[in-house]
Length: 470
Image (cartoon, rainbow, N blue to C red; front, top):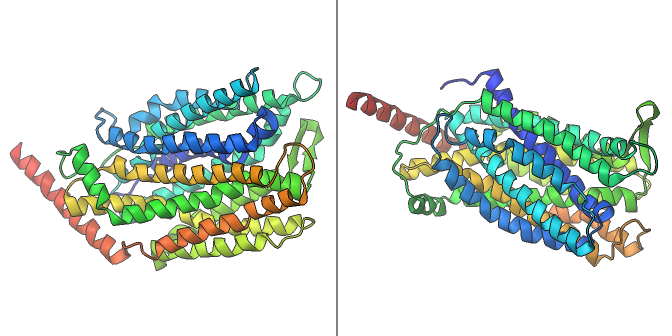
């Protein structure tokens, strides 16, 4: 099998660095932005997340089918990285823009801009994810690509989590007078948007598509029929939804946890640069650093004991450490940070494995049917993210409303208890469900080796036949 160059692996990683910067802005800060800066109620935001994300998740398979049927001199999936980069950046800035409108006008604006953002995200991220399935047929190289992808993804996230609040604060204080956080967050989003556009273009320039289906005679009906018979795909869909729910509900609640339960102030400041970092930002940074460690360890450990067992063990560990957060008293910030490291370390194992396993399910489908629908199969990855994020984000908003949350006031004991459960018990449930899905995942390593060998032989025979016919 052909080994990919370091440059191509880095180029592939750049794509998820770009996506993850905005993914983290949305998952960590958007709920807080909408309630404490934009001016919406938590319950309204939760409902908006549910409505817009369900539509967006349903949009993902359409994008996957579109990618499978795209023909260009650049391939099926790479062109979308070129075409969608600038719209991605523009809509991202508009999402973090606060218009001078009535409360109902703001809610409509939020619905429109957020819906457009998620659709553009699908149009660039589903093809990017699908690219993994056509760059190489080597299973271990795919895991390596996934490792690079998530090192860069968490690296991009790390930049955002370390810089978002300080950069927003910096821009909010420009010009003197009272801080204008609405302006600060808009300009911070613009900075990250510009970086994301450049990174997407580098991914387009530095990667290549190599895998062609054994047969090009496909139909949407046939692709969907194959997908419905793909049991491993459904198992990964469930595991992916539960994993993202685990992450999104704890991420969405974290700022509230630090502000209203732990009552923390700034962790440290740099007066000469007019920059301050809060404990919540440090919490996020520690989490991303631990994620990167988990991503790095995922390949050697999964090579030794298999992807399935590694995935299960990581989610079981995340369940235990998440439950431990519930017992932390409000004056033990250092213990919260320690548990955050171990929870995030566990989560870091899962993401490269999950995406590598999606590529395995595409191979499985081709092995069984003789037809390959990489984009449709990989759209499951984005769809599971969206559904998990939908459930986590909607539950976060609804739970805040249920527990009586009101922005920028001292919370009562019931609200504080609810916020406490949102960073511990509820995420633990998601992690446990994800791990349980792995118990029934059927693609073990011996079968994967057999599939890889047989598909390689079929493709080689097809190439010989094509040359003989020519």
